[in-house]
Length: 365
Image (cartoon, rainbow, N blue to C red; front, side):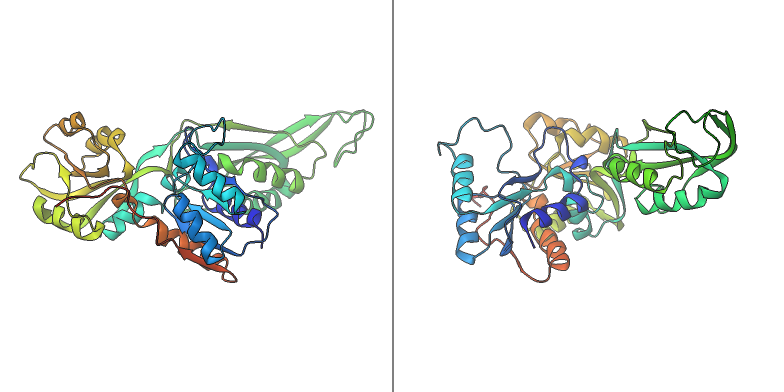
């Protein structure tokens, strides 16, 4: 098993097309052709984590945060980022980062924290835009079923909890095969009229290549006619944050105590208590101040996130309890989740969680 193969699996499981434009996900350094001796799963690929990988005989780090976030114009070891990358390159340790590709994944960062808190009926808080594509093509009636099956196998036609979704209209198409053509039906030099089915299917944008390939392989025509276009529909299962509900309403103080226990943090920062019960909870792992408006519009009782600034706490408008539990704390379940995913897929080599990768923020209680 090579580093490139592990990276390809992660690219499929957590598509890089899900990641935000500002992010830097995927294989950040390392030789794809190298054999994998083992994987160390970490939150951040720091120098100490690279040392840990080397000491354990592991030559690949799968990290949540990308150690290379902004462009590197030089590698001189002048800061912790450059030192980490230099050490990884010298030690032949590859680094892969998932970050917002996992944030936008339906069972990703926020969902992990939500389930740990006991939230139910989870849905995406801020669905991702510009993700859905529609394919429209035209095929002879007799071949329509075969073509649909190929498109479905490539991942098209999935809407929520339904698959094999398509819309079909029967009509006819016209064409004239020219010199050099090898028509499936019709004769060169003559206009042909063929009864056809217009097939429409929806799919996420990262599957565009696979869907086009399936179309060309399954379509009987030498030159199949088709269109692919974007929609303004938001993908209901891809996006940042989650919205869920507790099994039964609880007092605000009880909810805060539960957060401290589950996230293993000694302190919380929060806006003024509303003296109301908590049932609908929005969760955004990491830095989530941008989601305050979305949580309020969703009529959440609480937004649980990290990295709130002074003025952010005013934006609850006395209707939304804002809780800052810390950046690392609201992402604390990522390592275990990634280790489990990789161990299940690749049982033939070691996948371990880093023990040197810890929260960089300390509290004096």
